[in-house]
Image (cartoon, rainbow, N blue to C red; front, side, top):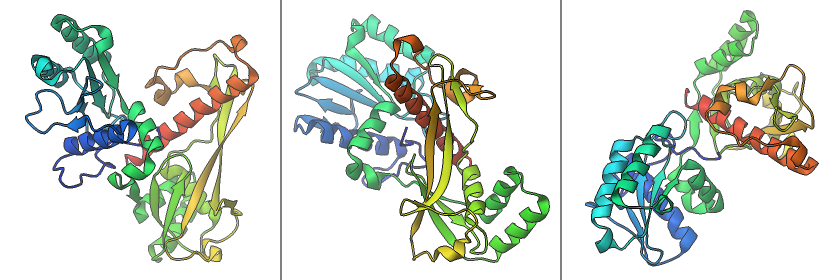
Length: 335
């Protein structure tokens, strides 16, 4: 996903007073932009189990959130069941026919079953209950970026000690880690670095005397990017990332010193991640179903023989992009 809906990045803006209210406001803003219908209204407490009501569509929304978001968070059943029961009690008054849970994290299988069992007990059909998870709201954010931009703060400030740790993680010899750390400690330079896979902006303390290669290695570690390739057994394909540091979409040479770039005030550099794929398995690459981040999401198994070359390419690139995004979000949570 391009967006992370956790409390770390979603801002609480007035008149909202809490993270849950901020999530509800984001959902309403996106639905309002999507439908452009005056019959879409937001209900204030006591909401009677309905946060947003689309009267003309006879559709009710209940917003549920977890401060950890999609990575590390899961929506539990009790509060959702409680909301459903309250909404059902007011169904005639509010005149809704379908009920949607708008969540920034996924429901566990157990929670989903508990909610559907309660819906059946109330006499609701399966198709009257919807689960609109983070993937749904991510797509709407991508569709209406200007409307929601101010609701997020994706800046991640990195400490000088964390850069030293990045050099250690990248297997630099101890004497070089010490040397580079001393150069960074004595510098006031802070670089702003975006990437082309997520809206994250790293604020990185660095030294003008270090090179583009040093910076690429540090950022690679800060974003959790692995250059290892991945096999997709069902597709019979493989893919891996290629990285560079760009300025105005122009790749910078690794030996060049940062000071030689002559950056303007507040100018941003880009950590560019390109996905390279092959229409075959790659030797020594890990299979996707063996990787933890992939196991968090159920992948639809495909049949290679039933797919065209173009379809295999599209699916391989799509899966790899999702994997890279997951790696980045997972890593920046630890800063």
